[in-house]
Image 1: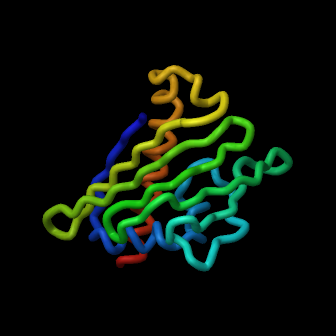
Image 2: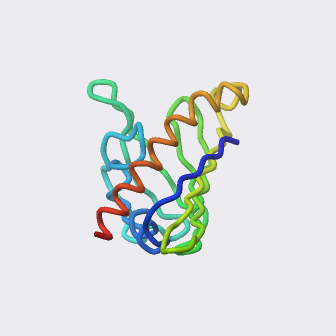
Length: 146
């Protein structure tokens, strides 16, 4: 499992509002080029974001499903990765002093060929991507809060 964290200068409710806005997914999740549809019940368990990854003409349509949620604290997701398999993702929000939040993203490739990639190579691939995703998430949360 690859885990990364970032301190965000916004409270947990501000960060969670971005996570709860399924239409923002394509703006902060690196690799996703657009959101095609978001279930009205997002982010309730079982709800889905239908998104695309890549650029035309190599765009792949996929889906991410909410496994469980604890508003303003945790969001567990199951992401389909087309032929590569799937991943389990946990995003945890930890309140800090002065209205800040530590956001922790943990991702594990769980099915398909991607899960056969050795842990150190998964880290090399996922760490930079997830670090950039958390940077974008933080920017959106801070910008909306301002």
